[in-house]
Amino acid sequence: MKIRSMMIALALTSAAAASRAAAQADGKALYDEHCKKCHGVVGRPPKTMKEKFPKIYTFDAAFIAARSDDSVVKILTKGKNEDMVSFKDKLKPAEMMEIAKYVRELGSKSHP
Image (cartoon, rainbow, N blue to C red; front, side, top):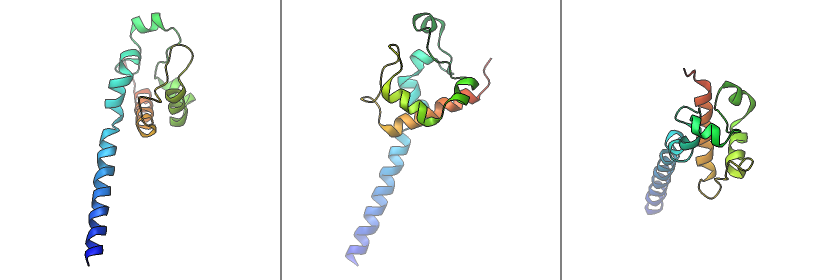
């Protein structure tokens, strides 16, 4: 009976840890912390960033149509040209995937 109680406690602890991890990997919060400064609140880089980095991506329908979540994660992991740094030392793979999902969500929205 003791072993069964310990197994149940372990399962509940694991479920709670998984729930916390999911909450921590909130795509919007991660985007706001790591991406918003350059790519803008809604996925459109501010004018100053466009002038400084002419090749910066805008997260619009064309961007989304051309990329999967995995390709966005790849860019986050490796960086892109000399302007986009790698985030492999700042973000976990699961966090990068949450950002990718959020970026795709931004690109699917219509913005004035």
